[in-house]
Amino acid sequence: MEQNSACSMRTKKKMADALKELMQLNSFEKITVSDIAEMSKIHRQTFYYHFQDRYELLDWMLYQELLVPLLTGLSIENLYDKLEAMFATMKRDKKFYQNALKINNEDLSRYVSHVATEQFAEIVKEIGMKNGIESVDHDNDIVIAEFFGYGITGVVMSWTNRGMKESPEVMTGRIQNLFNACKKLAVNI
Image (cartoon, rainbow, N blue to C red; front, side, top):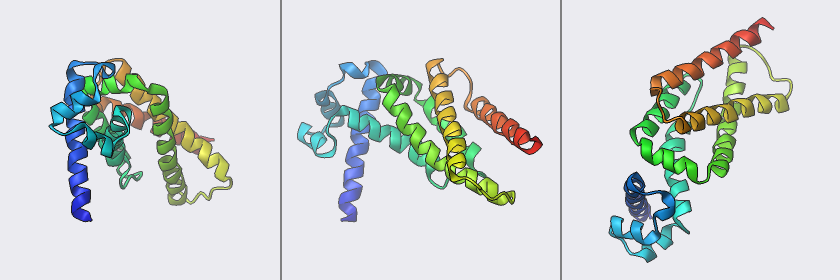
């Protein structure tokens, strides 16, 4: 069973690499499943065994390349390192991510924001516990988490749409400055 899973993952990765390469030259709309199958040297039926369509492949790619590394083991201690790694991944494949984020921006933004909100809810709770602040209202914690989840998603989307001119370090520093300013405000209230 484990070998089948590894084989399936290799096949998916092969198709993802083909799509990424194709998107360096063409817009997503011009790429067909046949193009992906041909580039990855698989049969079309193999593609459909793994994915419903090319949109599902693209979603899988974004999840695997950006969200899994960002969210796996995410904590307040490694948040900035993980954000910087995410920005670096995107900048390394700039053309691909710019094309990818134009395709279904609204759905992708909503999904990423939802996942980020779940993670920030844990971080908000962790910060509170480390500072001896017990949460009095879970709903307020969720609103704080949503604010940062949607905010970071918006910053990433905006950075991508502006052409990724700033370095990953600069972008991470800006988010860190924002968090530090929020902490100072919260302490001084």
